[in-house]
Length: 174
Image (tube, rainbow, N blue to C red; front, side):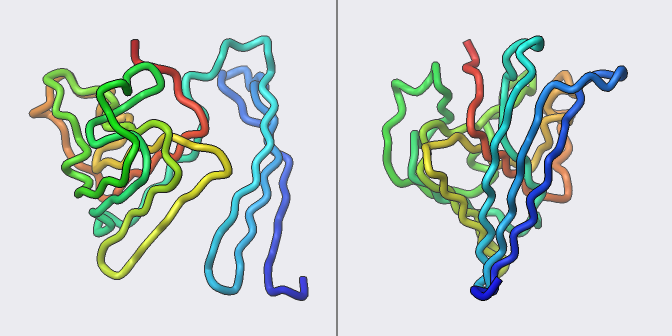
């Protein structure tokens, strides 16, 4: 288009079983501006035959050097839709390592609820995510698979990326 922006829209179906039964229809539009800003417009329709999704969002694998995070949302400790009353809504900044809650039995942790924006940076690289509505995020040096596979915290191995999950919705932990 004349403003130097590009928009590709793709209709996709996602499958969750070996039988390839569709559980989600997505309309996705990525817009990349000349300044490098990336916008995602997404419309999703869930097949109601399936139960509610425990999480709906986007997972990004970023350079591991992006090791600082700042955000405006619930913190400074981890917070979820059903676990946020001890947190306050404010601006927070830390390292990715400080976001990790070191539970004896590893599981996903470090989420922040009700965020207006999050920014990761390091080594001259910066990524900022904002939403039309508040969202949740998690930034970690561990993948969800690593946290699920290991029985003890001393068995964890960081991946070669900073893993950023941007969630439109996530079930609580209780």
